Image 1 (cartoon, protein in one colour):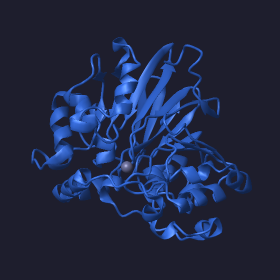
Image 2 (image 1 turned 60 degrees about the vertical axis):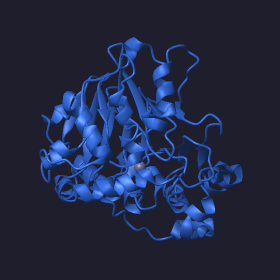
Image 3 (image 1 turned 120 degrees about the horizontal axis):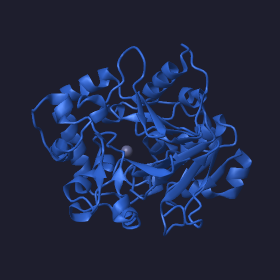
Image 4 (image 1 turned 180 degrees about the horizontal axis):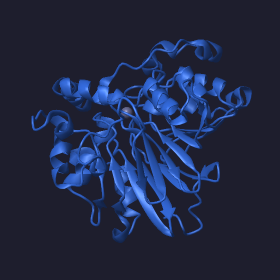
Amino acid sequence: MIRVEALPAQEGDCLWVEWTHQGRVHRMLVDGGRGGRGGTLPAGLAARFARRPVTERVFDLVVCTHLDADHIGGLIPLFRHPPEGFAAEDVWFNGDRQLLGDVLSYAQADALSRLLRDQPWNRWFAGRQVEVPDSGELPVVPLPGLRLTLLSPTSRTLVRLGRDWTREVARVERQRLAPTPEADPDVLRGGDAGLTWDELTDAPYQRDESLPNRSSIAFLAEHEDGSRVLFAADAHAETLRAGLRRLDGTPWGRPYRVDLCKVPHHGSSRNLSPLLLAQLDCRHWLFSTNGARFGHPDRRAVARLVERCERPTLWFNYLSPSTAEFACPELAAERGFTAVHPPEDRPGIDLTVSGGRVAPTDTTAGRAP
Ligand SMILES: [Zn+2]
């Protein structure tokens, strides 16, 4: 059983993950979303901590997938002013120490790098980069009851990120400080706004060129009961495909079964390529975004997914202007998909993956706080 909660994190990711092993609950946090006001924990993460007793706030692993503000922002207050009882046995983040030696630049990535100096940082990688080597086996990290196989980033990408670190960090910082635009779906959706569903389905794929996204730590998590979740971060479709092909052991790559996929880059059309979709045998897709800033998910990405997958279920952690279109029962029936949204005033979604099934976590049984 793997429980995945996509906490409300505005346009970002903040995934609280739990699983059991020998009767004990283990947990992992993947990203912190955008930081809260005045350097506080984001509200969704603070509320999640408040629901856990102080004695149950130890994480086997905390992952900062990459340095974009909608992933790193909430982790800074977490390490700067940790909630009582919080501890992490390992923290994965490719920061300045790994990429630059001791050269400092600025902004959130450096802030997190400084905060992690006293933490077990990239411990599984002996303090070095969390990366997929150019050849050989993919790195496999056995947590208790959960096996993580790293798919992204590649060594080559991190060499480039190290070279461009100061420029990329400055660009991300400008984006962080820019005011959040109102999520006006017509403006944000650019070229997709007026397209019919058929036009969206046939719209061409253009790849993501963002270097920070390409540096995302993405991995497959397999529980000892066989449940599989793909945590795709904001990784590039091409990197994920290359990783899946290596996992599969064939040069062309058979469709790889996963029970649940955290959709890469919040459902951007540049990260959900037709070829990546063809390489995944997956029915359940988790979208983490309220559509702020970039209007994610892109309409053409959702249309592409729905047309290429067998009766998919789309799980959204917000009912917002950019996700509401897919809540239309007529559209879902016509195109053969199921969509699940939380109530507008209670964002966040909590899923349990078990025995090949994905369902909302049963919080009434008293086992799932
Ligand atoms: Zn993101």
